Length: 257
Image (cartoon, rainbow, N blue to C red; front, side, top):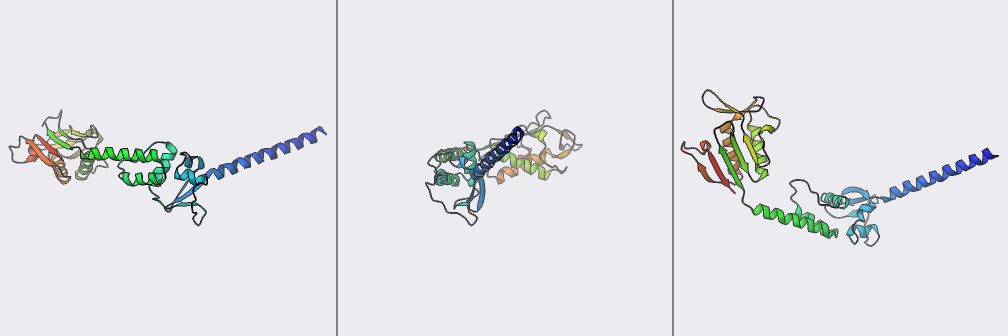
């Protein structure tokens, strides 16, 4: 008799446990929300969308704001679907985290205004203002050639994007089919310095990697740096020791933009 009662109790406990588990699964599933934003589908949790009270998304989730549904029953919001990923990332992280080179600050600020996220809107506009101030600052470029292996050729620019262009150009003109820019030459995001070179019999300086792989001549590097600078809108400010008649042979070149 005791065994039958015990078995019944166990069956009841299992049913109760399974019932609780199914209820938890149901609650978890109902907490997942699929949004169709401008044709892009995003799946997130309800608590993420309701993080900021009185925001547009919080209003939809809590029934304060009416929102249409698409053919599949998902909430449909007629906004920029690509930019919404940044809105959602902000709701998830609480910080403005944008990819390097992001240039759509004005559009993102408008999206933040639409979704009634003032904290995000203020952060985007602050970032935008800082970038505008930085763009008004003067960009300097200096190319110095010490003719000494301890120093070599040095390219300095306070704009990291120009240094990146120089790197890409050197990979293209390299004679050794480089897969990428030789890292042993890169000192920082603002400086490239070439110290590894040897002089050939005719006096030409050959730029090498540490493993003696030939990259190109030092004169080629100077020429490519100068041409890239001119194409990017830099103007030559001063040149030192240009007695040989070509700025490529100058010991120092100063550009400004």
